[in-house]
Structure formats: structure tokens, C-alpha cells
Image 1: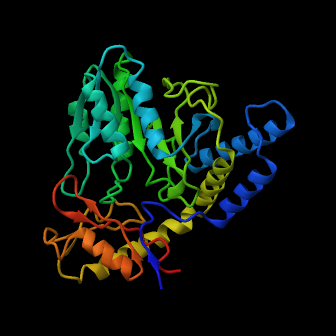
Image 2: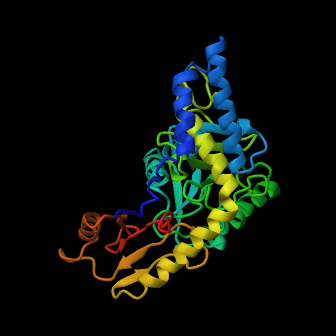
Length: 351
């Protein structure tokens, strides 16, 4: 028997998404930018998927969903799309536990003269809102804090953090700071309502919610200005040129719609599995739970190996041995030190 526990890395594509992709590939394969019948059939598919993805995060305007090649491009479009609007380098804020799609992009901006503040986290991996408030400057143009951390699983206080940024903007109308969150791990696992949350930009990924790989989206709050990364035909409201990948966009849409429909039952199910797994793993000597025990992703567990430096008991060795036993997990370094994390998502253990 094989047990796959790496759902935070990628999920299998659900059969409903595969079915719609097959239909699009054989019947709706036109270029959605073309005005003829074949093109308009494809365009209808794209717009239907836009409505479905918007529904996952309760975005009132489907046009606020910009399809990308995945979460990495969505993050890059958010960061670079904002910062490229400024002729002179300014200041931005991220957390110290961002995905590399954020941290490496910001590192590049630093080389170009941008000032960057990296907010530290507590022992549970959580950002202190007071630290964000203290770090904001008159020339801060963007704050990006991950919604749910993919290694330790901690869910950040996004509503409170976003409120701090928005309140500053209201108090000082000339202050242009925007708030972005990488919600790749949280969407489809936790309820997200962008009409209620003080969020300007939010990144999504299809293959984290049982959709196909190779497609994601960036939610852009109406009125927020971005500079495109790609020049060309002006697709995706002018923010992401290039012919849309209609089949996988359609699969993403179906996966998003089903994730939204199943959220009320799936999230409690995952939490029950997660907590049961934590309880059983706690009985194994040498394994230490990481992240926040309560404010964490429903589908996510992570453990540190107490002794991970030796050749016989390294994280990579454990991953290989478990793979030989038919069990798939991920191995990560804990924010640059020698502790090894084992984030795994027991989404289908009970099935």
C-alpha cells in the first residue's frame, strides 16, 4: 500500500477537472482572443473559470482574477508589479518566513537599491502585528505576509496585519502602502473573503487544490495599479500578456468551485486527521512538533527531528527510507538552520 503525504507540495488532479480539460482540448481549443466562433467558445471557458476562482475567495468582480502560470508568477506579479511603478527605490516589508517566490524576488529588488524589512516570527512562526506597525515608513509601498506557512503550517493574523496597513493608508491618504498575501496553501483549506479582509493582492495556485499544475491566479483589488511583467497582446486585463492556457484554466476553475462547495465539510475533516496524526507522532521519541498548535493550516503537520545532523538519521535519509516503504513526505530546512521539517498533509489518509 502506498500513502501520499505531500499534499502541500502538490495534489492529484481530481477527476472532474480532468474531464473538463479533456472536453476543452477536443471541443473548445480556439484562441480566446479571436473574435470568431472557435475563439469565443474558448473565451467563454476562460471567463467561466474566472467566475469560479473568484467564488473561492468571494471576489465580487471576476475581472479581479488574473490568471498566471502558477503561484510563483502570481507572487512575482504582485511584488514586481507594484515596485516597478516607482522610478526611485522605496521600502517594502515581508516576513522572514515567506516562500522563496517572495523572498528571492525581494532579494533581487535589494540589489537594485530597494530597502527591505524582514519581520521576525515567534517560536510558533507567527508575525507580531506590533512589529509590522513599527516597521511601516512614509515610503513603504508594499507589505507581503504569507497567509499559511508551507513549512511549519502556521496561519498568520492576516486580518489584523492588513488592517494595520489599510488604517495607515486611510490616516495618510498620500501613503501608498498595499497589502499582499501568498494564500497558496490557505485557499481551499480555510474560508477567505476578500470583500471582508483588508487585502489588496492575493496569490493562488491550482495544483494545491486538486487542479492541474501550470496555472494560478493573482487577485487584484479593483483600483490597484500594477505594471505587467510580460508585454504583448494585453490579455488578462492587460496584466498578463500571452494566449491563455484554456484547458488548465478550465481545470483550475472546476477545482476552485468544488473546493468552495466542500470547504464546510472538508476543513473539519482535515483538522480531525491532522490532530490525530499529531497525537500519534507525539509518542515517537525524537520528533518535535513545529508551528502553532491552533492557528495552523487544517491539512498540515510538521515535525522536527531532534537529531538530524548524523548521516544515519538525516532528513533526506528518512524521506528516502519512507519512500521505499511507500510513504511520500517532504523534507525542509527550518528557516536556514540545521533542523529538519517534515511538512506533510494527511488529506487522504482516511480514504
